[in-house]
Image (tube, rainbow, N blue to C red; front, side, top):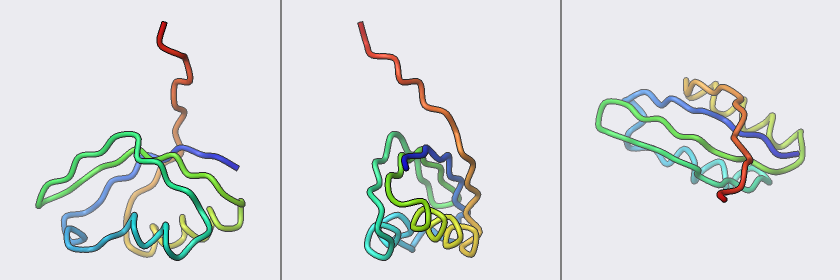
Length: 80
């Protein structure tokens, strides 16, 4: 299964390695499409691939950390 997520991080998590933790603790592959972080907040667009059960565990982890996650569609058109 492969999904794309838009994530919004609260500033209180600025010192936590949220994405790194997900890669190490869940059987998923994470590709960071785009991201921006500051001391007060951050956002990222990720593509996550893995078994549905592992992706669900990762989503539960994000919710527990109060990271807002929204499934999104990524434009898959090739550059011409």
